[in-house]
Image (cartoon, rainbow, N blue to C red; front, side, top):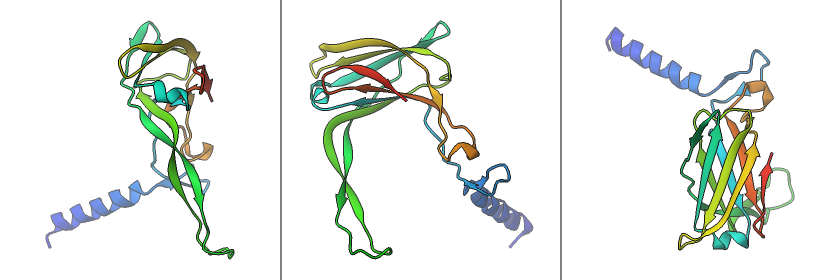
Length: 170
């Protein structure tokens, strides 16, 4: 094997090992390279979610607005499954079950950690407006590996209750 090929293999191996994670500023705590999406999440609770066919968001700050796509999906809840026994090494599990809600996320590049204005519009399957609500929202930095491993992208979350009230979740 030529020295160029050996060098390329060595570099590729080091890149793979580096991608596995790193130490958090010398604390000894491992930090993965997991990231977070930058944007605003949306949870719509049952029974209101059954009425909703489409969600849109208009997000504005510093005189500019963005209208990212919001793809809604059915939400689920964890349902415990029986354990194989009572010993510490026995296995327990859970399965996902639809809960009647819907969830979505609006990817927003450049989202600040200062107040933004969000207008949430929900429409039914025929396009008729069900709700239009403007809220002031302050996105917060996320910490996907904990505070010792540095900041991730900023996020915020809106929640629509089963009777159609909109709130900001932290």
